[in-house]
Every structure is written in structure tokens, then in C-alpha cells.
Image 1 (cartoon, rainbow, N blue to C red):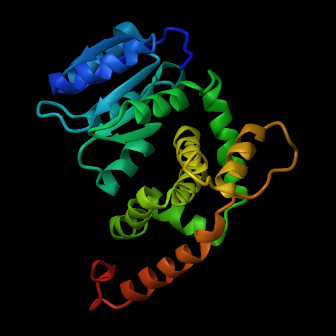
Image 2: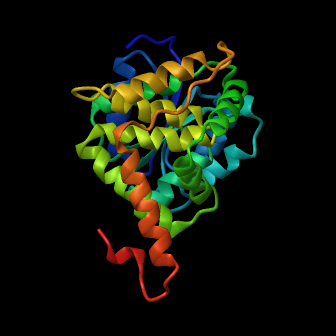
Amino acid sequence: MSNRGENILVVDDEHNIRVLLRSTLESDGFSVSEASSGEEAIDSIERQKPALVLLDLWMPRSDGMMVLEHLNQQPPERRPRVIVLTAHSRVPVVVKAMRLGASDFLEKPTTPEDLRISVAAALEESSDAAETETQISQAAREKLTPILARIRHAVWNQDINFIEHTLGTLFRKAWSQPAWFNLLGAVFESEGNRGAAKTFYQKAANAPGGCEAASRNLLRLENVGKSPVQEEVDLGDQQSFLADILELHDGHHSDPKHSIRSHP
């Protein structure tokens, strides 16, 4: 992996995990700092201004979500890219983290290869990312299908039942069928989160066999702001599944006797 010697801050309360992450990153030429709590992380970020933070969400004294909430209050130019680390990837938690600005998430324990892919994607974002994300958000929202608009509305309003059912199913399917990461990318692109969208599109496009829809979405992201005509977000062959999920959710929530959790 080529890099410019950027500083990466590794935040985790477990010493062994920090050592493993640091070893991989330093072998690729990065300068690595460590923190074992949210308070230490905030102090290190303000002092060292790292290019990227690998942030554990679950720490006993002060968790990673506190760090994300702190960074979310800062001007865009003062926010480092953040990859969240979690051994408990509950969907609402991951969604909240990415809404607060996280570029990607990694489940612990992670592999060196997955770490390198996520770090490369996060650092690839340009210095004018905030302006680009605004362009993407506007372009994407203009082209949202009714299905994607409904999902975006649920995510934005923290409709937890809907999120756990719909996005939870997407996450589970994505680990065995990577093309489903394309749909997760589309959801986050609709919110203007370019880092998360690009990460999920790349996971789908780089999987064995690839995903043509994800490749088209990646190409479209690169052309946002360059072309006067913006193409629609490509949801791929899985779009019909989302329509079924929406119908199931709305139908059962109209009848209080039914619970969406009773359905697979």
C-alpha cells in the first residue's frame, strides 16, 4: 500500500488489539499513535491531528460514540477520517456511527487485508471532501427511487424496528453475498456520506465475481460535479427485495397485533 506517511491514531482499551493494529500499519509505513479511552483519543486528535482514527466503539470508561459526537461538532476541516471497530456490530449502532461521520466499520477481530482495504479507502478521500459530499448528497437525493427514499427516511429518523429489520438483513446477506453491500452504499450515499458509500460500493465491486451495479456507482461518484447529467443510483438486481421488505414492514406495523421481529 502506498502512503505519504500519514499519522493514524489507534483507539482501543485492549492492549493486544492496539499492538496488532499498530504492527500492520507500521509495516505499511504509517506513523501510529495509541489511545486507550475516549478522553485520551480526543486529546490525541486535538494535539496530533491524525489523518485517520481507528476507533473502538466499546470501551469501559468512555466509548467511541462519545468521540464521534465530539468530532461531529467540529468544522469539517478539523475532522479526521474515522473507521469504527466493534465486536458487536448491532445495526443501529453502526448506522448511528456512520451518521456521525464514520467512514467505515470493521468487526473485531479483523484481518490485515481488511484493515488495509479500509484504511486505503478512507485515506483516498480528498481534502475537499465536504464540498464533494454536498454535491453527492444533492445529486443522489434528486435521483432517489421511492424505495431508497423510504429507507433514507427510516435511517434519518432512527426508526429502529425498520433499521434492524431492513438494514440488519442487508448486513447479514452482504457477508455471504457481497453484492448486497451495494444497497448499503446507496443508503449512505443518499445521506451524503461519501466515505461510507464508497466503502460499501468497493466491498461489493471487489468481491469475487464483482458487482456491476457497484462498479457503476463508484464511477458515478467519481464523476459527480464533473458531468452536467447525473445518473441514477443503481440498486442492482436486489431492488425487488427491498420493495418486499417495505411492504412487509408497513403492513405489519399497521396492525399492532403483529411484530416485524416475528418474520425472518
